[in-house]
Amino acid sequence: MTATALPPDLYGLTPVELQERLRGWGLSPVHAARLWNYLYWELADDLGAMVELPMKVRRRLEAEMQLGVLPTALATDSSDGFTRKFLLTLPDARTIETVLMRFTGRVTACISTQAGCAMGCVFCATGQMGFTRHLTAGEIVAQVVHVARTLRRAGEPRLRNIVLMGMGEPLHNYDASLRAIGIVRDSAGLSLRADRITLSTVGVVPGIRRLAAENQPVSLAVSLHAATQEERAALVPAAKAWPLDELMDACAEYSRLTGRRIFYEWTLIAGRNDSPDHAHAVGRLLQRLPAQVNLIPLNPTRGYDGEPGRNEAAEAFQRVLGDVYGLPSTVRQRRGIDIAAGCGQLAAANRAGAAR
Ligand code: SF4
Image (cartoon, rainbow, N blue to C red; front, side):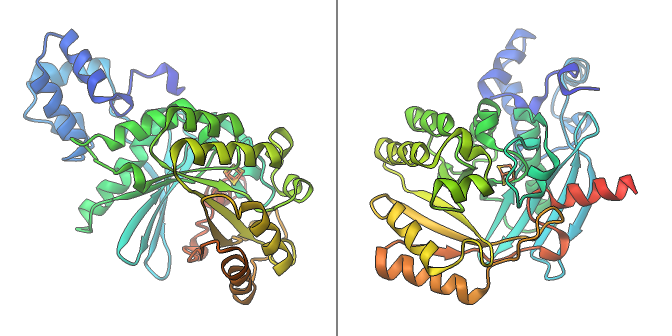
């Protein structure tokens, strides 16, 4: 069954839309508020469990709506216990990845916005598998609820951070991604703060300009990986559609209109983009912008023979950025390497296993 053939998904509705729908059924806003509470406060995974709703409401919900809970096809924990990766099943039986990452003092969920990805970044397992389809807003919200529910059942602290950095390019699925963000931000529901929601793009220029024009209050991360058009296009084919100079213009406009700095992601690939010369090139590119650089050692994938940049290279890179250009930077803690936690790796491994 395709997602579009299904009844509307409760997870895809804003609170106002839910209220209007129930009003159309002759029900009061109190019922809508109770239902919202079940969805996002109780984190209920079954319409039948919503016992405070009158039976006739539950019957109608079951007949005309669906609660788009995504069943877990596979869940794996990293050996250090910090990372849990879920392979979740969509209604059309495709699978997507959602990752729960525990850092010191915070928990972050990494959420997918598409099944597969059209951007084709050469080192990315999702890029290597190609694009299948956009996720609906409800399917994006369902992943956040899944992680929140997992934490609740384990008695762990509430989910406060999400990154749209899983499978897919969120700005290639702009409307659904931003609708989902609006739903998970609702203060009577999951109540995630906008500044704790990070949207990561490979550099879809029209999407960055739209985010800026709409002043969407989320944090923006831009995957840079290279500081020249030629080097970047070899790693990120999307750079052919949106060249580096256009991307940097859009980023400058974004920061000017929103007043927010951008996080620039740099996957460190040994011998390819991790030298001090590369660090100087990034420094020159970003030095006049409100920017932070996040260095991420490559997660090796089957389809790409690069190796992660070494710790010493990352430290030298950081010194150039900070000492010469005054740019703040971080080196991302590597999480879940033993469970293929890099974007798309578990789904790719699962596909390969199924094909054997
Ligand atoms: S890194 Fe992101 S944008 Fe690039 S192919 Fe992978 S999922 Fe798509």
